[in-house]
Length: 242
Image 1 (tube, rainbow, N blue to C red):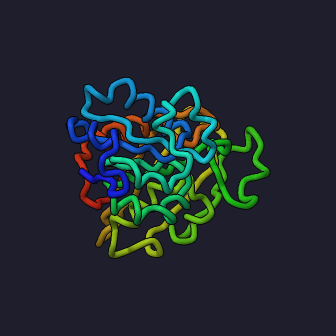
Image 2 (spheres, one colour):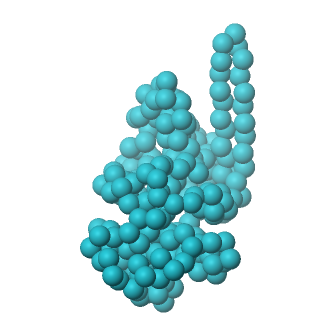
């Protein structure tokens, strides 16, 4: 278990030493962050988990839902808390800025889900999808390397990024990513993964994740994060892709 050197005798540390609960910090308080925080508070003790801290860019969103003593006003203050696992469910720039520090203190779970969606579910840079209209049907927004796609759709291409990391012989430049806007997908996000091998061999998987129009995160993704959190046992400097 990782402890803060700056507060060796704090009440937080004393409580953690007396408990076997895994201390979880949640970075981000969108739909997925809210789901995890609420579930940890409701079921965490039975599952061996407790809440170490919650951070959100707008801390006012946390008032009334998160105990004041668990709210981080500044993310850099996470080093003052006893934490075993840090779950990042916000913007990828937070990973860029704080990822190395997170890994020096705790396990770090990275978000990894990308789906073809109703246009209202995408969060894209620039004007890539500013002109969509209901009833237009299917539109391919981008097809190319994941390296080029990630900056265009940082909130929607986590499955692709995870695949690029796992397929280390291909990398981000060698994995092809495609995002599709489809006004018919008002109830699901759809992920299609195709693996092609030698002599024409290929395997294709299709997954449908229930989600309402406008939702960046599908319903089943919340359960996926919860299951991953239950499997994470403590500090080790590892990245988990869920």
